[in-house]
Amino acid sequence: MSSNPSDLPRQPQRPVATPCVKVCIVDGPTGLCLGCYRTLQEIGGWSALSDERRAEIMTQLSSRRSRIDPAKLGPV
Image 1 (cartoon, rainbow, N blue to C red):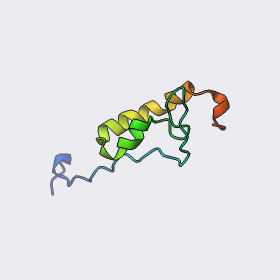
Image 2: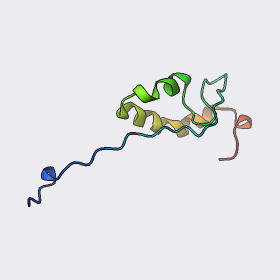
Image 3: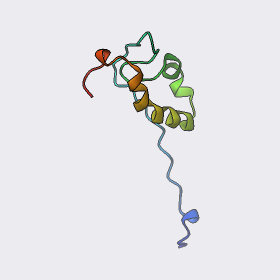
């Protein structure tokens, strides 16, 4: 048996899961969902996006929270 990592069987990568938390309320001023911080376009197209694009969006979500009026959000 080879010890070369490239010879090992590849594990299928798991798709990037949706960040949806079932709080589907869109903030008018920002256009972001108050639950997952995605835009309606991102939510609607999530299943068609590449894993790379989904991962890119996921990295942006925490910073998007700061764009929403804190009075509209629950505790962190």
